Length: 594
Image 1: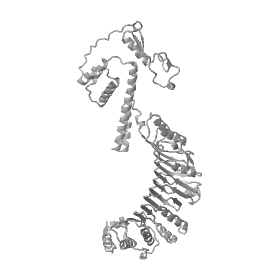
Image 2 (image 1 turned 180 degrees about the horizontal axis):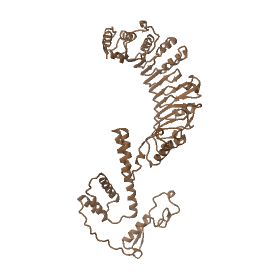
Image 3 (image 1 turned 60 degrees about the vertical axis):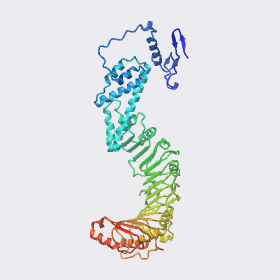
Image 4 (image 1 turned 90 degrees about the vertical axis):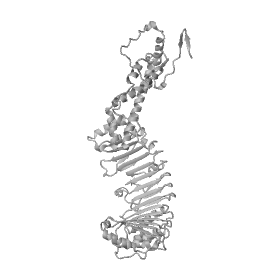
């Protein structure tokens, strides 16, 4: 709507740009008839006032304006490109800002810019810019400077992808000397690593972390790593920093906490902020609590957590521990290293999304917490593709058979009581739960325990889907019988890899021969055998001869000598010739001794 009063057309002012709840209620603008600014500071009113003065109105208040003084300095002839821009009187101010930016970059690099003088003189010939346009130009100038800063930071960090890791960070720090605006640009890097053990005195660590997080100016965090102990800062500071990282949409979080008196009992309690367990941006979470008890909140929901890595964490509540795994709908990988359970009879891992699970041992001082190893581990993961259990000490593990299991590995501990048949039942049952695996790895220096278990129980698991078997064993009569059990109970096994482990002690008879090993019939499915660490002992030669005589469709056998045998070239040549003379049940076999 327009109002005409004489020869003056009055236009109602536009609405204020800011929201009503963001304005200052103590300032009033008579032009807008609303709160938010004073009339003298109103950009729209001042622009309207300038237009009236330019058209010859309000002369009785301001008087006639004197003509501009003549210029004594000759103006150089502009280039054709600049002349074309000068002819356009509507050249926006933001374009001039870009020209100023290019001139500044040219001067910063020490090069000449051909349009410096023509652009500056063309700017001087232009009419006065309205105040509201000046404000917009200042906003655009800040925006362009911010974009240049972000581009420079991204480019400097890109250098570390082609060089060392520290070079990119060093280049970012050097930018603080180029401009006052870039003085704290280094604090906006996306990856933050804070190590309290490199600070002295300890008070500097807290001040440094606080200052970096306060100077980020809204920049997001990709990786946040915090390593500290009670000596450098208390857990309240750490919780504040972690909460700040969550507010900056952190994607990968790593916390290494070392309590000052970790050997004292009861075990200390470590509590993380509740917002971490409700974070929607977190993709990777890694916690190393040095055997501290992880205090979990009652509500847990991390919708995009993909990897969970826990080291030396003690669990004390089975219900909350189960929520930690089940309330992460896209959790794919779980790694548990030296984790303990306290006052729990059952440790349960239940998830519909886990595909890779690694359980790397239990701490030795678990006996101090639970009194024994009689607790049970239950695993329910129907989409599990890979499982690895290291340092297995005979716990009762119950794994619901995942139909899509591809890779399974179990590393048996040597500290077993052979007179206790409960361990034999548990290990056979655990292998039975892994019977759907396509690739199976079994390792133990006392692998004959499995053979004893199979003889006692009389029922060895069937592996109908097994295609590749990997064994890390010491060659003994019992182990050769156990290899026979695997070959007879895996009808689709095609690849066999044996990594020979050399024991420093043994109570076996040196002159025994595995002639009565229980082969039901010739193996007609195994095609490739690889033996590593071959030392040429009598039992090892007997194993090679035994396999050659009983595998009917074997296509290739590769024997890789041990380091000790490689040093004795004469003995290696003699053993190689002896192996080549062994009879073979397969007609198309190739024996490679290298």
